[in-house]
Figure 1 (cartoon, rainbow, N blue to C red):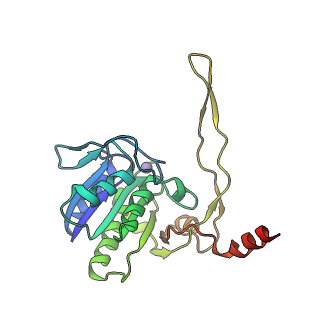
Figure 2: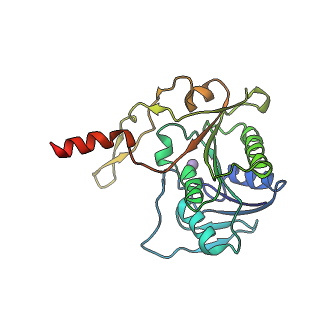
Figure 3: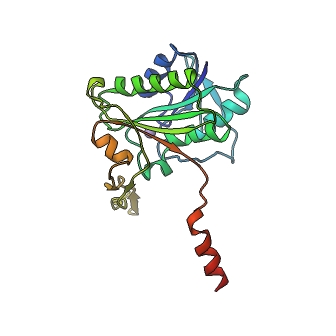
Length: 247
Ligand code: MN
């Protein structure tokens, strides 16, 4: 099995190093990841300049672009094979609910999915990063299952693993995305030149976090697995839009 690994925290992040190492027991692993932390990069592609790919001493490829650039370049030119699966992570911090819109971790997997490859984004749900081994175990379990038991059609799976010891995890739950409250206010700062600068604040707390959501699973020490799609059409609002325009 040929496995492409990427992330948004950068090619040097502990999460990607541990992930790549562990996945070697399931197949041939290639890492293509951003040269610096591009968390929050979403699905952006770099179109205004060429990108440079460098090889680190440990064999990882780094790219001076976004997570989406990394997977795009890897699949459409850098590699001489098509990966069987793409795994993005292990992200340091949750990607639940609306986070998925901004997440570079999810975006790297989404790019693989758009290119027709089964893709999995894996996040550890706290910034403390105390139990990467739990997320690694889940990534191995899911990729192992994909190898044994392909899903038929490619899936884009968004996985969030509670940052607890592996034996404290209470199973895997297939979930839908929850929703957060609106974001915390920006922080205003004075620059040395007397200008006002704005620092975007953290995401808000969970608003829709009832049973069935990723938030609820993680709050109850379960791993959440949410299948995502990238079709943004609001199908149930089609009649409203038609009716409004006909007025
Ligand atoms: Mn990140």
